Figure 1: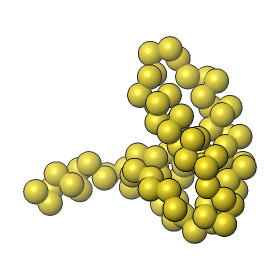
Figure 2 (figure 1 turned 60 degrees about the vertical axis):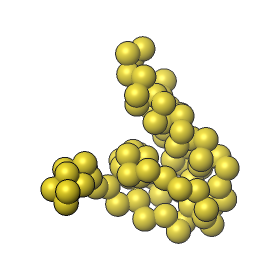
Figure 3 (figure 1 turned 90 degrees about the vertical axis):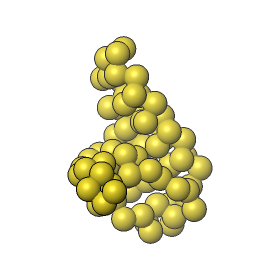
Length: 79
C-alpha cells in the first residue's frame, strides 16, 4: 500500500469525487490551472498522481481521505 503524507491526504480529500480514476482526472485537470510559481502545489499534485497511478482501486477504497488542516499546528503543540 502506498504511504501518503498528510499534505497529500489533504489534497486528495479536497478533490476526490469518490473514485481513484475520478480523483486522477480531477487532479490532472486542476494541475492545468496552476500558475508557474505554484511549484510546491505542482510537485505535491505530481506526487499524488504518481502514487494513485501505481495503486489499485481496491487499495484506494481503503484510504481514509479525512483532511487535517491543523496537522502542523498539532505537531507543534505536542512538542
